[in-house]
Image (cartoon, rainbow, N blue to C red; front, top):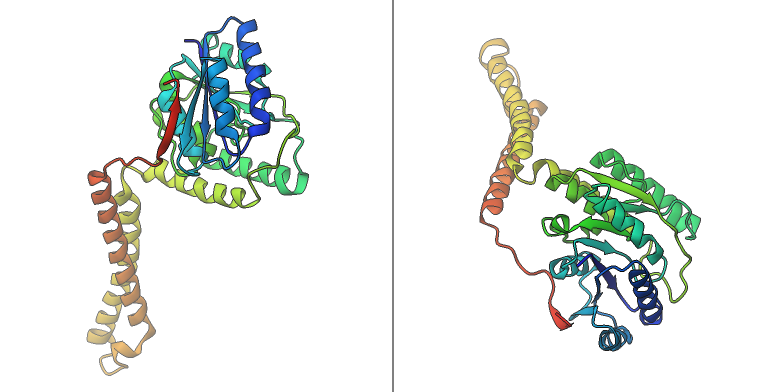
Length: 315
């Protein structure tokens, strides 16, 4: 199979028929063998019924329905697990991503040898204050922190080699950072393509300004995991050594001063340096404990399913 199109969605019943027809037309005109995997992330509208109807009309349409809303990352993870195409294309279901981009995204993977190609919505039709400016700031921070030189990390339109999506773990809200996850997994040939962005045709956006706050917090998480995820003791142990050394230094100074320099001076417990020494040594010990606990958790963790599927179609 040439292409798997993975589409996570939440309450997008109005756009699904049009999106399906558009994708099918592109696939047929380019003679691609394909599958379209819709992941219904707990929709409360008629989205699942629309997907079910499409699956009876077109056997290339497949569906996964979650019991409730588990989030876009979990939806993508479920779709990646089921995808069988040599190239996996992801896009949003709101018609803001154009299926006309699929052939070139496919060729960039198969002919130009990219592991992953991310779309760049250079010209956007979103609100400037609530979306465009925060998005630019977010992408700048992501580039500086991760070292992946992309202009639009959060663009839903991306293409992947099959082995990329089978070897990365998309969890939490890490769908924004799939290129970073791919790079950390060893897939460093990451490209970018300017793609057409279209104004939303139906409904309203499901994301508010809080997604950028969550995005920056996730960025800190992925920075930590990429550097210390397999060796937490390296970070917490180093901090522990620094803090404990500061505390021990103050305690040593107080001891020498009381024993040999100011023998009749104030009691050690009446001096502020004593409390600095005490607090910093306690903090240093706590950092050590945090590092040990991190190592123990890392070595004993077991993978747990992060979503529950209610039903599937055509798998």
